[in-house]
Image: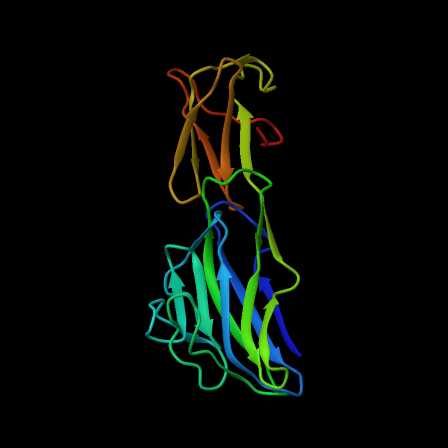
Length: 231
């Protein structure tokens, strides 16, 4: 009975986040399985992080016919040859898998990382499933196992918005100021925008970080903020 599961470190993610996936494989049955090979097809919303494949904590090189881990960039597919005696991963992931002994005392862990598309739309669910192929010696046929459940990541997109006013009586509900430059800092690099005719500004596609919003005061004015400091 070969059991495979898959987890991700961030079930809720943001554009540009790096996700770490962990695949766990253990043979708890009474017969051995040979030529054990993992493959994992990345969905369009993810980009593989080069050099991130590890098998039981040992880094792999991503190249075929070199070590047990291989990333096929053309098809966005990860291969990992696992088990005792596993050889170098090959193109197409067909040969050189190792042996999963009966009643394994511990699981084999395969980890890799992938980056969420920075331009992904809000509330997108990224689904991903791993596949194990091996040969069951006693049964005498090939077996194919999918990780269960499918690992889903919910992508959220944050925004910051507010208004800029000519606040002559400190109520923040006075004359809106259009065309004011507003700067957002705290992310990878500063962003700027300008207020519209109602004094409104907005920054979208943000990660879950701390930010600072700074409006550039027009000539003859000084910046002030509303009492609750939310706009």
